[in-house]
Amino acid sequence: MRYAYFPGCSLSASAQDYDMSLKWVCRFLGIELQEVRDWVCCGASSAHATSHLLSVAIPAISLSHAEQSGFDQLTAPCLACLSRMKTANQQMGADQALKQKINDLLEDEYQGTVQVLHPLEVILKDVGLDSLGKGVQKRLSGLKVACYYGCVLTRPPKVCQFDNTEYPMSMDNILRSVGMETLDWAYKTECCGVSMTLTRADMVVHLAHKILRAAKEVGADVIAVCCPLCHANLDMRQNQIADRYGERFDIPVLYFTQFLGIVYGAYSRELGFHRLMVSPERALENYGIL
Image (cartoon, rainbow, N blue to C red; front, top):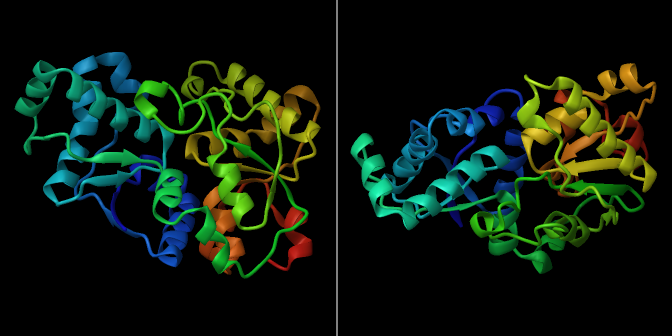
C-alpha cells in the first residue's frame, strides 16, 4: 500500500493538523505515503477562472512528477486539489488534442496512468471496514458525530466516481467501524461557500451558519470533515457567526483522521489538536484524551 502524496497548499500551511493526523493514521494502518517531488499548487478555482488550458496543465505537472517517480496511485486530501487532479485526468483522457497541448508544455510528459484517490477511498480500498476496528485502543462511545463531506467530494459524479452523490456514507462507515456514533442529517453535502471566501464573505458566513445550526439540531457533539477548506470555514468562522446572528455554537470541527488517531491511541498533540480554533476539550473531557 504505497501512494504518492499530494499535500497541496492547505496541508502545508493552515491545515497542518490534517497533514499530521493523516500521516499518523497511515503509518498506523501500514499505508506508505511519499510526497510528490516538486509538487505545485493545483490551481484550484483561480486557474479554472483564468484559462481552461492552465486549469488542466497545472495539476498535470504534479501528476507527471508522480508518474515519473513510478507511482500509479496518488492521494490528495484537499477536495479542491482532488477535484482538479481528477478533472485533469478525465479531460486529458477524453481529449487527445488537449493532452498533446498540455504535454507540449510539461517538462515530463504525463501519460495519464496515475489514479487519484481521496484518503477515505484509500482507507476503504486498502484496509477495509472489517479490519479498521481491530486496532482500536480507546472508545468514543456516546459521542455524537455529524459527518460533513462538503460539495466537491462526490461532484460531478462522472469525474469523482465515489460514493453516493447526495448522501455519501464512506466517512460515516469508517467512523462507525471503530465504534463511533454518526448521525443522520440533511447537510452532509451542502456547500460551505469556500470558493466565495474573498468575494462574498457574508454569503460564506450565512452558509456556514446553516450547516452548524443543522448539526446542532440533530444533536451533534462534534463535526467530522475530510477537507481543509470546509474545516476552515466551519471551525474559524464560529465567532463571526456569533457576532452576526447572536448564536454561539462552539461545536468542535475535527478531521476524520483526528478521530481515527484518537481511537488508535495517538496523543492529541501528535494529531494537531492545538491548532483547532474551537477546542474539543469539553466534548472529549469524559474520554481521557486531552
